[in-house]
Length: 492
Ligand SMILES: Cc1cc2nc3c(=O)[nH]c(=O)nc-3n(C[C@H](O)[C@H](O)[C@H](O)COP(=O)(O)OP(=O)(O)OC[C@H]3O[C@@H](n4cnc5c(N)ncnc54)[C@H](O)[C@@H]3O)c2cc1C
Image (tube, rainbow, N blue to C red; front, side, top):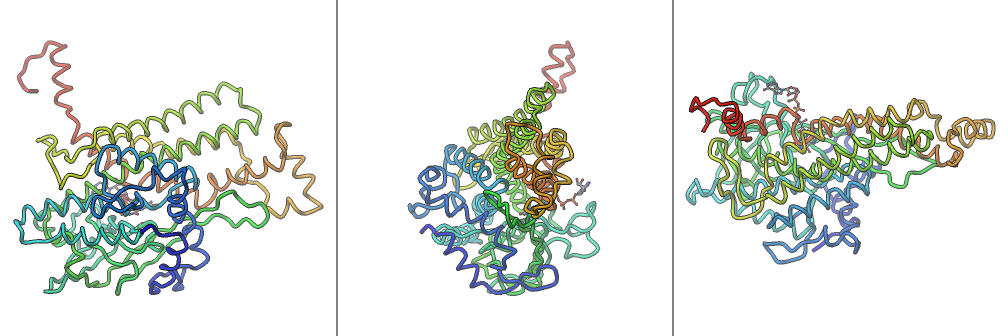
């Protein structure tokens, strides 16, 4: 059953209070959370809009019912293409991150890894069936899940079991007949404060000695002994000159203070090799999501840069053309990488040293090289994109007078006169545009969005490791040796 935004908000209103913000315990529907709820709520509103239906609605392979694509397990390359395009369109609409992809990406990763872990355990575990039960409800009730992957990680150089404090990565502290007890803290978890559920997966490759850290599970976001400390990223309030869409975002520290998880919600427990694959696979699906959202951010950046040039009446200057071309190249190369990753998607994963091997129960996994090159290119370009907007805008967005000065009879006419740069642009429209550029370039939310665009889905170095460990560099060395006339028999 598809849910409406109102039904989603009603469900949030019934959840137990376990969220702290700036020293107080807050309700999920606290007014400061509403901009974020409006952003993610767009995924409910647009599912009913005929223009978006084809991208947003899909038949569940489990129930045969029509579901929201954010709860879907990809069954074909077409599904991967549509997920990429849906993400781009929705992010264009809300002017940034649509915030619902993490649960979808984690669900796809767990769906595959739980199947493989059961296979290796030869029927002793029931992870995949457990996960399918969770998934059926997730789809039927059209729920939102956050994905909690990033651990606090303590000393970066030390791996989980080598940390001075064993709680630096989320781990199992007790196994009971009816479930497990987990302890630790996940950080930077987007939209956990407005989610129904939290899916927990490991952060990194694990050794046998780290097996207590190889744990994946789902808990309701208000589950007992789950505590959230949230940061809320809202733009400066507009009182008189409203934006067309006013979104927001939240990120939580999620503390698991000896949390009980019943076995039917546990999808991995101790299988350290699968724990590492799950970490990589969530990263892969999430980097594929970036091939939709980053091109959308690119679309917004191109629009902002082009308007900044126009409003400054410099649109015909040669350096403007070069900069617009650069932004378009980043945007469309990121999209093209994701498109290719979708097109080459298969029910297979790449194992370094072996190549592609069948993986999971048959759902589609995007191509790893193309997901990683696309995410790395667009992630590393975040500050370059901001630099171009800054360059073409000049200082205007940084020092733009506040709203009420434009209503004050002593000031109003002076301000509109002196912000005029292009006679063809009404000063009221110019003012509205520079307020928007200030939101993007000079606000706390804008800065947080840039850090998220750079590190979210894994810092560029993580993509570089994936790319160089999976790309056939030996083959390229052999090409050169053949051309150069070197026959040392080393590169087959
Ligand atoms: C806005 C935002 C939203 C996010 N949303 C989510 C989310 O919803 N879910 C989620 O799970 N995560 C989320 N993340 C987390 C994101 O995936 C991480 O920020 C990213 O993986 C980097 O991890 P970190 O922040 O711990 O950085 P760090 O690991 O602290 O990185 C700092 C530096 O240390 C280096 N470094 C780290 N380890 C080593 C090592 N062993 N050896 C050498 N150098 C090392 C890094 O390369 C980097 O240069 C989000 C992040 C942001 C900023």
